[in-house]
Amino acid sequence: MKIGVVCYPTYGGSGVVATELGIQLAKKGHEIHFITYSQPVRLDILEPNIFYHEVNVHDYPLFEYQPYELALSSKMVDTVLTEGIELLHVHYAIPHAYAAYMAKKILLEKGKYLPVVTTLHGTDITLVGKHPSYKPAVTFSINKSDVVTSVSESLKKDTLSSFVVKNEIDVIPNFIDIDLYNIDDECNRSQIAPNNEKIVIHISNMRPVKRIPDVIEIFHRIAQKEDAILLMLGDGPERERAEQQVRDLGIAEKVRFLGKTTEVRRLLCMSDLFLLTSQNESFGLVALEAMAAKVPVISSNVGGIPEVNVHGVTGYLASPGAVEEMAAHSLSLLQDDAKLAQFKQQAFDHAKKFSIEKIVPMYEEAYEKALAAVW
Ligand code: GMT
Image (tube, rainbow, N blue to C red; front, side, top):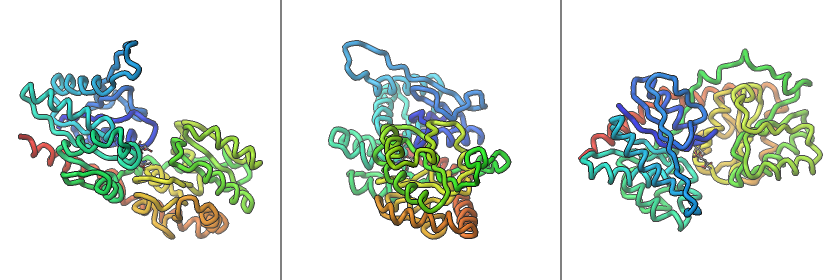
């Protein structure tokens, strides 16, 4: 199949799902054309069957906001016609599903029907999409997609309760290439923890929805009872405040902010515990990545997280903001080596249920369904 993939070329989240899926589909012989405003972080354009088409937004001084959707729709039309693309898969509804609908209408005028698969990822529904400024356009473009998928049962439920959606929503969970995390030989704990301290890790885009102050509060409580180091990976608007909080609490020498490092897998492989304190999380791909690296997860119990992290098996869950409870759960693992080893193994075993080999065929089925809708 010749598939156009539209996504945000970002460090985490939907950008990573789209890229890893595209790479896997290309390995299976599909021709994958990425259409984005810059090259997706994990994409190797030299791999066979992978192509990259950059969306150029022409800057014009009249516009306070440059019309990205127009440039994207135009690029979609151009790429579909020149490359013979059979189907578009757009990740994150805003504005991709809307731009795809425009492209579809333009192509229809030229006698070509372009099936569109839209994957809903999270804040495109639960936060941004619900906002009155976007809601009518998001509802419309979801309903105009030939196939709609969501990354968790919870996100499907949220979509159906917040929008009037007429078409079916197929749940296709996020996935993991488990082999990528099997790197024990590259994992030197003493680089980070020279005195054999326990290593706690958090990775996110550090936006308010992640409740970063809770991560620091939990670690502060852990550090009072156990020798430990906190690794903070990623970057975002809450980072500066977190750095100040760490200084105010007098734990700066135990916390390392590593920004958008490319060493995520090696750092996960050294870690003992992952903290995910979000107010809202449709899936929590990063928790799954941690589990694939044999790291148990202490998380909030919102959205799709309980579909990934199993309470008392792969880690523990608590209500958002319950920092005392999360700290107690953390210590129950960090202070009991046998239990920690057991949870590490259980986290890994559970992560295997989301292996890329199991999930990719579900997307291929969604594509077949979309193609069957032609005319
Ligand atoms: O909204 C974000 O945080 C970014 C978003 C994305 O599209 O990059 O992340 C969402 O999609 C991920 C991939 O499907 C999920 O693992 C995240 O849970 C989800 N984020 C939220 O729901 C907050």
